[in-house]
Length: 590
Image (cartoon, rainbow, N blue to C red; front, side, top):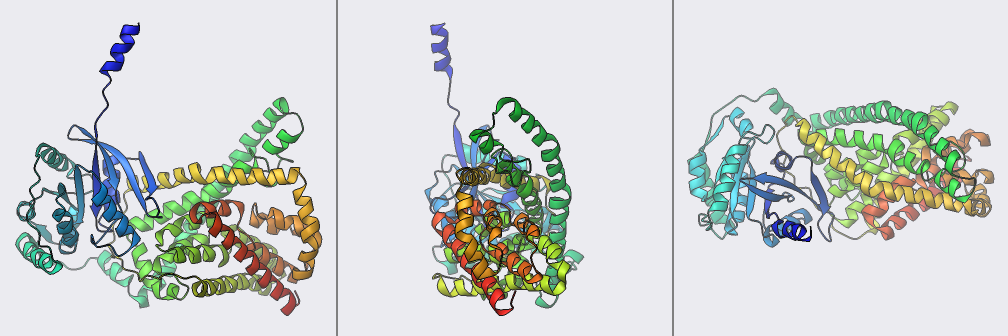
């Protein structure tokens, strides 16, 4: 037996794994190529010291196993932003055996500049002409053989959505692996020489025949013209918001809530009765009471908040966001709103997290990653939290404050919006840092691939489940422990009088303020037993909407901004809430 085990150890051979980089300009379809090569088994990571993401996956091609790295899109090896810096580092530091340079076949001339720079590094490269079918529909014909000869690298026509060209890519990979010496054509060192060469190459390999613009192309032009683009943007945002509400609240939310309350909770309570005696551990695990929102148990509230209250909105938002992202609409929206958002210290891509914040703050805070500088991310996070209430809060304000008349509901929501805008302007003046202009390529509209869309959705959900959910559960456990040792009652005695003096609310409502950290829309509804006047309802809803992020949002805020910045933003919100609520109480007599 010992001999057999020794033989088994000797015959184990470590499988060789090579590295394949996917590089190219933004919006050329690299993500779709990556998904086509790797499937769903991928990992998303931040480059060390930055918030820039890149993805890794596995594939087998030409008899070899590859670690595929999808690096951030870049226009040049002379970086002008953090994403390009990371792309250049990965290209220069990597010991990749092959670099797949993805180019847009419909924009060959623009894509060749980065291609020539990459070829000039001496790395083994395959040029992948993606969107080959779209080029044909636009009347663009490219002589692939001549292009390959001019560049000195293999050139493969490719359609990432359908997989057309995979066999040709595999043959090209095999040829590069078999060829020990990489022979690329000489590349001019200066930019002027590169552009002259690009012009000569395009004249020799590309032919464009005239075609009348299609309806989709006309729509693409209308969506970037401010006169027509802004109304179309309002329609698109309203449609996206309605779809998120339909999917998140109407379908997933109700189904998960029913499953949790009707199946999971009774089973859990039955098991607790059998195995847990009343006392500390039962209170910590199950909580006090049967309501999953107020019991503060790790296995009740700790799971209900992330998996039932947040996950449906998160999944719906990312599904809708992924669709309009792959459709090619987000760059158009960013360009349209760039001028407006610059006044708040953001560029156009800040519209994405602000739009998401209308529904749920968690995906909105995660979407802040699209912004490059620390100043922009801090301002965007503050605006996400303070500019508008999330959808459940807005519904609760309309339902409870609106019963006294539309004027009171408008006063509450308007005050929150004005406070959020004021916070954005103030932070823009207070925080130091650059506010870069937006330089973004606007791609043509194209139908998203369902496989790629669902793959990205799963990656984002998996990241939430692995990273954000444990932090939310830990926060619930901390609140439950505070309740068990009497810290919540102590807070009521300490903060109750201040609540009555500054905001004009009953001191007995202090526990509502403390528990509002768990779920803010529920906290607004918990004011009902205190028989508030219409004015007190306005002040209370404004304060609860602004004073602190909910537990789920705060957990994600810590993860995205770090503990120091997260606490600073939360304290800024508390001051803002006291100022807005106190001003209403004093000025309007609420």
